[in-house]
Length: 201
Ligand SMILES: Cc1cc2nc3c(=O)[nH]c(=O)nc-3n(C[C@H](O)[C@H](O)[C@H](O)COP(=O)(O)O)c2cc1C
Image 1 (spheres, rainbow, N blue to C red):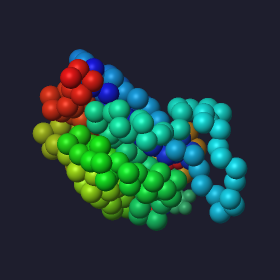
Image 2 (cartoon, protein in one colour):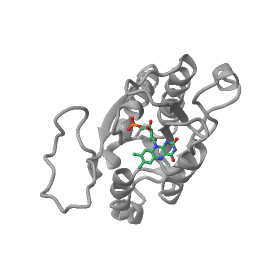
Image 3 (cartoon, rainbow, N blue to C red):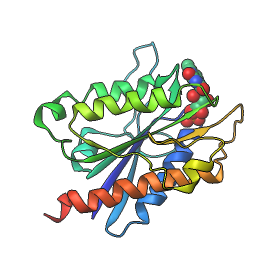
């Protein structure tokens, strides 16, 4: 089995909903399975270590999750046109994996949620790719051959999956956002099964 790590941060649930749809796409690929992980929130107060498992949602990610995965799909809400600090903090702790090349040659992709249509989806997605490129990963996007990418009036970009949340407190993806999130998971999983069936070797 090729295992794809879907690693995300979500405060209000929109990015979490994209993550679930990406997992569905991954699990539609034979010999591929999803591992869903999140990162703890950050505060300006130094707090005692977080419990290893949050009160709800998926477990917190560890370096072992990154080492064991055959592909990585990284998600974050947009914060001032960039990824959220808790996810960046986690990535900044992966120097040892960068030194060892543990992530090199694995496929990767990114996803985000914004409040507004032009609130920085592209800038967030592209800047989220940069640490993945430093890690030597193959970046996977979304193709315009997919009708949903041409027709969407909300989220979904060639750079990765996305959602425009607006002021809604209940994340509700459009059909195109859902289709494209699933497709992103499927594309990473298909590539991972072709290039890196690590757990089979
Ligand atoms: C500090 C902060 C900065 C934000 N910056 C942006 C932004 O630059 N553009 C935007 O459209 N939305 C911005 N938002 C809104 C979130 O990106 C949006 O509500 C997103 O859907 C939340 O995802 P979540 O439900 O996964 O937490 C910001 C929110 C916060 C708290």
